[in-house]
Every structure is written in C-alpha cells, then in structure tokens.
Image (tube, rainbow, N blue to C red; front, top):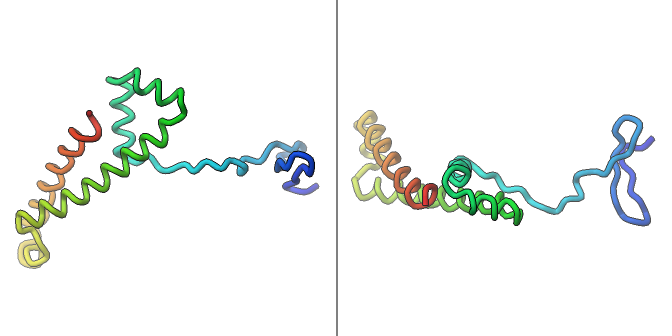
Length: 125
C-alpha cells in the first residue's frame, strides 16, 4: 500500500497510518510564525488583564498573527534601542577591548533599560 494517495475527484491528499488512510495535514496553506518571548509575555498579559481582547482575538482566529506581530515589533525596537543607547553612552568595541567587564556591565544596564521600555510600550499596554 502506498504511503500517500491523492483522490482524483476531490484533490485531497491522504496518508497511510497503520491500516487506514487519513487526510494529510500538509494541505494547510497557513503559515505559522513563531510567537517568541515577547509574544508569550503579551499573551500572559492578555489572559490576565485584557480578557475581552484575548477572547475576541481568539474567536476571530487572529491571536497567533497578532502575537507574532507584537513579537516582531518588540524585537526590532529592542535591537534599535540597544544600538542607539550604546552609541549615545559611548559603549563601543574600543571599550570592549580595554575594559571587558565594564563593557558587559554597561551593556547589561542598557539591555535592562531597553527591556523595561519594551515592556511598557508593547507588552503591558
């Protein structure tokens, strides 16, 4: 017996599982984008504090795309903020060469501040 067969009349693809043919799952054209850490944090916030928004997005089937968009925006903004803050504060490769521990401390501080900005503007809004 063949592993996959296609019904000529309907065009549906079937997969052999054990002794039975079941619809193959690769007919779905939906792309699932990763939600990521920021999307997961926003999801927790929606579930706890914005239940009506969460329910509406879930019912409409827009929740995964919405969370992926939030994650993408947060990642892009975080990257830009860290670069800009590092530039403004003089944290560069020269500092990294001469004072590695100082560079790490300042970059951690910058990343923490940028994370707080992302949390207040994207995650907990």
